Length: 235
Image (cartoon, rainbow, N blue to C red):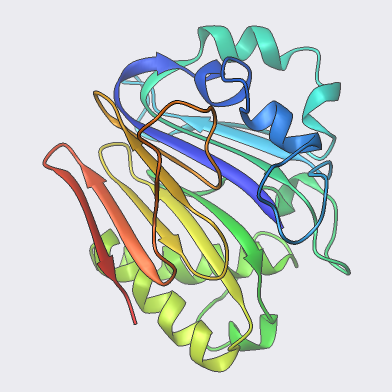
């Protein structure tokens, strides 16, 4: 199991997901409060953000615990964007611990993080050329393949999750997908929360104890864009 978070709204620093909040992803890497599967997320981390001078997002990821990277705090202070993503990883037993198995995964303008586990056999009919043997990379490949055909994000991510959920009923398929101007987040088998404050903050569990955090019901899609936030059932 893993923890992840994303922001869409006025430009802010990447540190707002990791270091600044009392229960940001740094703390969630070693002391998550709501994680049901695994107790630490020390098998890698990754971050992604959008820069107006690049057509594709910037990504930085490592296969080491987030607290061991001495360069990340400075990077997170200066990396600013209106769309951010960060994730810390607890590898499923049998999955490789390597950078290519660590979120966020990318394809064109898309960033994707998976919080959960899934049988790769359930993904074989949907995915091709995954970046890693990791189940999350296979899931990302399936979503990206549908996005490349022009299917809107609000349809592509739920489509894959529904199909995989049928083939693997015990799969945990929480997803975060960012496209620079929109975020899709799915709750499927684990916790997901959202906080609205000038923009939308989405996370596996609240990053702080401010009022206003709302749980996204299981098997629901949260779609955030400049037009607002919509939460709908997906099965």
